[in-house]
Length: 232
Ligand SMILES: Nc1ncnc2c1ncn2[C@@H]1O[C@H](COP(=O)(O)OP(=O)(O)OP(=O)(O)O)[C@@H](O)[C@H]1O
Image 1 (cartoon, rainbow, N blue to C red):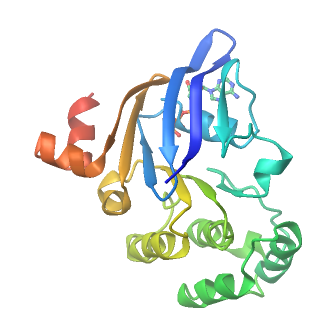
Image 2 (image 1 turned 60 degrees about the horizontal axis):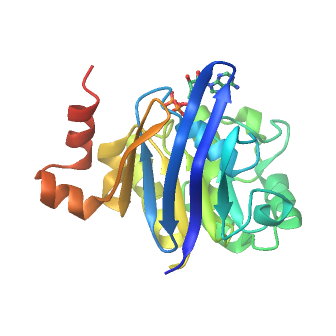
């Protein structure tokens, strides 16, 4: 295993608001890590900084030793939390676009996943329901043979019946030396696939532990611990 994501004193301020506050984290390859925290805790901000959409105010993040930029985009697959693809494009044309953009895009795998989720290629994105649009976006992100995946709320809008398929897709489709960092509020659904959990609150890391260790030491699930730590 090698270090694939490293944050050193990573800080991001929006005016007087500190969205990320001196974050120090190290993620190794081959791990699936859940970024868990209440609304507004800084999860999306961290993922955006990692993907070069936001610039740190202080500190840095490195992806396989590189700061986010053109080179890192070649091996980092990013699923944003909001719709980001042109709505007028059909699923088929999106597959072609990804194939043109990313050398590591596996179109055969993407097509197989579309069939499994009963999605057809001829429809325009704008004609799809919210959940089906999310499925298409996730399929595109997971069909890259990337080294690092950042998935911001990958199953937020997806119906419970499809969630298991999608989680299995995530597990099945990432290679053993890749790293998956995902943010979610659906901890109970997702924790079975997680190796590690980062609890984050008001931009600060509360802890970063292995999921097995949490279960053994605390005698409860990650979901139960989350509810306890962040009880309103
Ligand atoms: N572009 C921005 N301008 C100003 N403030 C911002 C901006 N983006 C995020 N914030 C603020 O930064 C903080 C962290 O937001 P972020 O979206 O990272 O939280 P989150 O943990 O992803 O939340 P959620 O679970 O609700 O998606 C919040 O207080 C948010 O209002």
